[in-house]
Image (cartoon, rainbow, N blue to C red):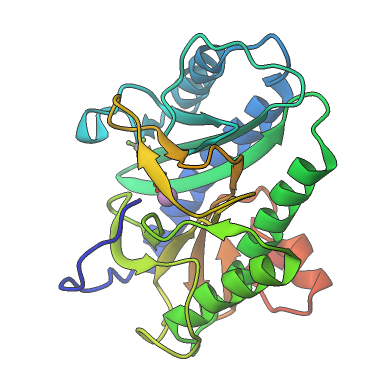
Length: 277
Ligand code: MF3
Ligand code: CO
């Protein structure tokens, strides 16, 4: 999303509200897993939007995206030099493309929001690495979603992973965000910055962390459709996103099937994912 203002307070969720966000998160996780299986050469992004609509229906969930400032679909599908907010269409995916799919669901008024980058057929090593680096940067950020840290510790960690991996571009005009009773809430969560700044992280916050990384420069523009964000230099881009809840027991990745348990266990980070569904 675009940068927010700084006026409003951060919504603090009750444990019951976090449980509803987990339900929304699992709808997002299972749908994205299904889309990853279905995506491939010969498939169109409209086909994938249709599948996502069916999944929402099966789950009895609503779309976070459909109708959002007039947005026409339930997924964003961004191909190659499109970074985010691509509108599904009849473009046929080709071997070697990269596709970022962003998807959000609402369960009983509570939102989950996540994005993955999918390699279509076989991608170049450079593109595979771009996606892997962006995904690791996301997880490094999620690992900092810990009570007592400051917001910019997340941002800093994301940036560090990207910068240490190569000369990539990190979008600055688009950032992560608070999430809960609305998809986009305070605070903005930039993917860059010095550590130790911004609000202190407390239990009951929920954040969508979403690095957007390019193979070239960081500069982007929006197409005439008023949505699709494309790199100025047409370099390819990757977008990975998860919704994470901050709990007393550690970060809980609401849009990951395993809640982040595997990653946090491997990295020695406490998380309620190990003990909860
Ligand atoms: N999940 C996207 C983000 O946080 C929002 C998509 S905008 C929509 O930037 F209009 F498609 F909903
Ligand atoms: Co988002």
